[in-house]
Amino acid sequence: MAIYNPKSLKAEEFINDAEILATIEYAEANKSNLPLIDEILKKARPQKTESGVVCAGLSHREASVLLACDIPEKVEEIYQIAEEIKLAFYGNRIVMFAPLYLSNYCVNGCLYCPYHLKNKHITRKKLTQEEVKAEVIALQDMGHKRLAIEAGEDPVNNPLEYILECIKTIYSINHKNGAIRRVNVNIAATTVEDYRKLKEAGIGTYILFQETYHKESYLTLHPTGPKHDYDYHTEAMDRAMEGGIDDVGLGVLFGLEKYKYEFAGLIMHAEHLEAVHGVGPHTISVPRVKRADDIDPDVFDNSIPDEMFEKIIACIRLAVPYTGMIISTRENEKVRERVLRLGISQISGGSRTSVGGYTEEERPHDSEQFDVSDQRSLDEVVNWLMVNGHIPSFCTACYREGRTGDRFMALCKNGQILNCCHPNALMTLAEYLTDYASEETKERGMALIEKELKKIPKDKIRGIAAENIEAIFNSNRRDFRF
Image (cartoon, rainbow, N blue to C red):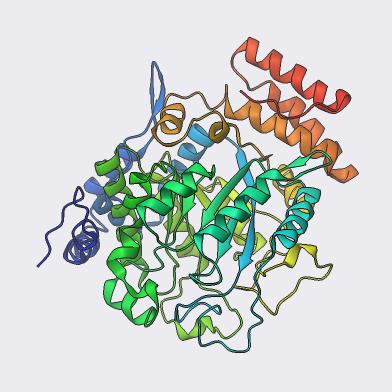
């Protein structure tokens, strides 16, 4: 029997079934243990020090106790602390991105994804480089600066060479004032050598969803194809980091397995990366199973209500305070609005989940990976964020200045967000307002920038940011960054 060891490189030891089951049992036994709950909440709360604000984070067992706790006033305290942590390290900034689907050819048999090999009536498509260019220009014309590229696993149709060629094409396109400044990559688990090639291509974050940490369920849900190999898939982030990629993104597809199991496994994976590599995940995504061609989410009997989904997000924020959190357009406007304050720091806007979808006037459905619940345009999402007190940020400065991995975490931990990320967010918002925004959005955004500039603590940085924003508005200059 495998023994739990967060420093091990073996999947069954750092994501250990016996430890997860024991954690769930421990959490259930202590969900009303007020002294313990108060102790955990005290540990989670941000602490002010001479060098800034620090957070201890929580272990998977501690976080699981809070997730199990159903005492109303304590649940509300969890939400309050989650909001405190979010504001301490990410402020009121929300980073914007869009997915770009390159190909839906896939050799896997995943039961929850319409791209699975046996689905013979979905339209299969792979973008040519000219089509990639057209998609990127369409995204640039919306105002996007950050993309997450997606592709099915198919060594013939989507080899790594194709992905690398697409990345090169994406970075090469400058259209009017548009440029994609960061390409994150969400493709199948691969080799250390391939990860080195992705690093050399200049990717931002390598993202790979575990789907489920429950090995038996994983094998059932992935009956055929290379993704069937649980260990190879689960150990991918270690190979990515060995290949030089220090920004990696975790995620599970909530609804495939019981949420308490997935939650514990997700936090354990973050603990493992910290223990082995000295830095945890750059991001954690929280997708839920959604309806799609050939896929009925009701088939999976582990769906979670919105209220529990929000609690999961809050407890993740307490457990891994410095990690970015992503929510996609799988979720509707109301859900996204509630979870923004609980820890989410990145959202997609104007997304299309079909191959070649951005160049179509009407949203195509014949090659979508999942139904998009939030179908608003990017401009509508940007406006909505500002109405709710958030700063829509198109910033990619840390990646381009080499502040990745432990260097980004150091920036986050030493409280320099307001002197670095905050002005960068305002400058990129000014670019968006000048080049792409509707009149209503521009008017609201300019008032927000004027207000938010005052929050930058250092006089010198505040002055430089104000000058740069003036140059963006009046001199057609772009791409300032701290």
